[in-house]
Each structure stands twice: as structure tokens, then as C-alpha cells.
Image (tube, rainbow, N blue to C red; front, top):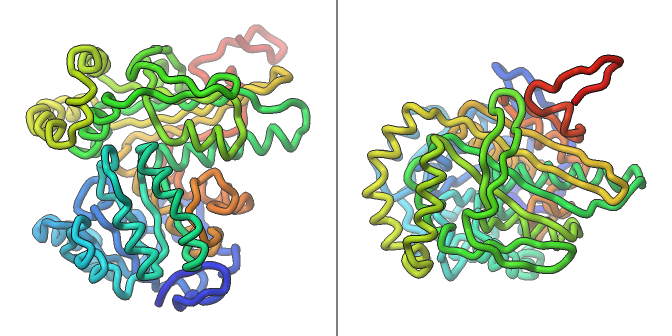
Length: 429
């Protein structure tokens, strides 16, 4: 059974109706997929890691009838994930650097989730290429600008193959892109001003429980110049500079965040048409931020762009980071701010106690959207309506928001920030 869009075959041979029922009950968040895709076979590459494993677990909870294949190199770790999921799951040993191994793994699979990062400093898109060759639907969690836009260049091939593909479909980027798209849509639908400035702010305590991969990703991003946009002009800035103190609202509070080079900046500029866009990230405890700043000043960019050297750094720091993670926790928060020409400013906030759980539900939400037929053939960023249909965004956000401690959309900042003070007559400061 193969999953394709737009009248193709995969045992999902025709376009699947958008409707599927959804329970917002956290204890019973079951999704009832259309009959044709209810028992789809899903391969999760990187399934033995924190992000891939969390995605597989979330899919098993949301859709117990899905058949899950945990793809990875470590059979022992794979067996542990399969034991956790139980039911319709199995392990498949896969080397994503070996085309034959990939082709064998994707044989008989309806959709592949590529969560085998880091994506930084890679020169090809081997999983996407094999997915198109084997006519397998595709979702990845790419958080690197160059890799994401390299994948985007396969759009025409995906259209020709009648295959839907979502790139950067995790929590951030991913859910944050959809939040931004909804803020922009709401602003334009009211016709009271044109969106002119979009800012992404992210906070994660420690590594968010996401393990060595997110640590490697963070180090690799420090080697990249930050691309941002100011009034339509592309500008380049020093990584982990431009600190701002941002209020992430209830459960998180105010946190320092710093500029990073993330794909949603360029994709939002190009596909949402926003002239001024930037992204910032911060972590805790505070000395991790200091350490990241120091690394950008003390280590040459060439060192930080070298995957082998970065892996050595990760091995060196990992025990310390894990120890601190045990104290810091793994809270995560995203804040998306939109400013319009008429002075209209709106905010979306998404906060969760555990990144390692939330990233799974976020990625699973994109997988379900593809299985329901809301993605057209082609390679799409989450904010593109061909990727996640406008009418499917609300359901996607609800699914991703399973277990959040604070999730609000399209509100003025004063309504969502920490402890606003009432002056009387409903006036707050």
C-alpha cells in the first residue's frame, strides 16, 4: 500500500477526504484516519533517537492501527523502542548513507519520516531522492536552511512522481511555521494592514531531553552566518548575537534569546511574503548561553562547520550536558510575533513541559496530515498551502499541542505575557 496524493496509487490511490474525527482529550487523543490509510506502513528513520523515537511513540498513541517500522543502525536500541511501542511495530536496520540499504528499507512503505539528523553540512538529500524513486510519501524534521532549500529543489520531480513531501515538519521549524502562516492569514483576512515584520523566538531548557543530535545541531549552527531579512533586504549577522529578553508567558517566563540561522526565516520571507523576518533561540541554565556565545568568538567557523570535529565536541560535552539536563528539565516554548503596517500586533505561543514528547506529537501531526490527503504532490514547507492545506492547519496545531501547558494563537502580546497588571476597566499594562 503506497500513499500518494491527487488520484495516484499507493493503496491511497485517490485523494483522501479532509475529514477525520479527532478527540482533544489528552488521555484519549485518537485520530480516526480514512479507511484507505488507517493501516499505512510508516518508516521512521532515526527511530532509535530521541526525535524519531518520540515520533513513533506519538503515532502509535494517535493511530494504533498504523504499522510502524523503526529504522536505525543499532538493533538493540531498535528493540527497546519496539518493546515500548508494542503492537504493530518492528525494527529495520538501515544505513541512510547507503542507497541500496535505503531502497530496501523503503520497499513496501507508504510514508517515510526522516528524523536522522543532524541535517547541517550535508551535501545531498539521499532519503528524499530514494523516496521519490520508490514513490514513497515523505516528511522530514530538517532544521538547516541549505538542506531544506536543496530538498525544495526536488519539487518538480515530486510533482512528476505524484508524491507529497513535507520538509522541516517538526516542532521548530514545523509547527512554528504553521503558527506564523495562521497569524499572517488572520491579519490579511481582516484587511486592516499588511504584515511587515515576523519574529520567531524559541526557548529550550538544556537540550530539551533530545540528546546528542540537538547538541550537534546547535554547535553546527554556530558555524553558520545568520540570514535575516530587513524590509525585504537580505542581511547576514553573527550567530548567537543580538540578544533579546523575551516573555514566553505562563509556565516559562522571560528568557534571553539569540540570533540563529534557521530555515523558517527564509521560507516565511519567500512564501508568506513578509519583508522583515528573523529567528532567535535561547537555552537554560544561563551559562549555556554564555558558552554558546564564547564558542562563536573563540572557535573558527570552519571548525564549527566540520561535522567530525563537532561530533568530538558532542562526545566531550555530552556527559556534562546530560547531568545538567537532569536539573534543568526540558521545557520548550515557541513565540511567534507578527507586526502589521496599521500597528496591529499579534502573538502565538506554544509551551510544553517536555520537548522530547512534544516534538513527537508535532512531527506526527504532519504525518497524519499527509495521510489524510491535505498535502499536494511536490516538496513543500509547512506554511505553504500546498503542503498543509489552510483548512487543515487548525487540526494540525491541535494535534501538535497535545499536553501543552500554554497554547494561544492570534492574541495581543499583553494578553499572553507573564502577569499583566490590570489598571481597571479591563485595561492592562
